[in-house]
Image (cartoon, rainbow, N blue to C red; front, side):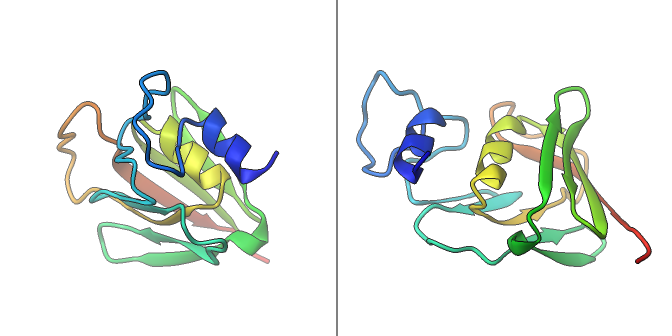
Length: 136
């Protein structure tokens, strides 16, 4: 499946048209770069080398997409990202759109909320990012 087909499948338009038959996903501003206080998506770059995970305590992890992480979504729990050395668990609200962008390797960073205030019900909210590193 090419990128145009993926964009169509996930409701992301490259042209920025306002087709009424194709409702945009939550947080989609029809721009090639989507950013909120919890994540950033870049649809213009052909290659995004890594995903930056930012915890509220300042801990930062760069996860190279070249590690080919397995990304799984469990509706009652959240998003699991598994590599050979790390398991990352992301909890929050409205995560399916973020999952789609992760699957396309277009997310440049995800930031954990500094508090538990959920804000707007339509927005993606990142409540927690848990990072477990396995011994090699």
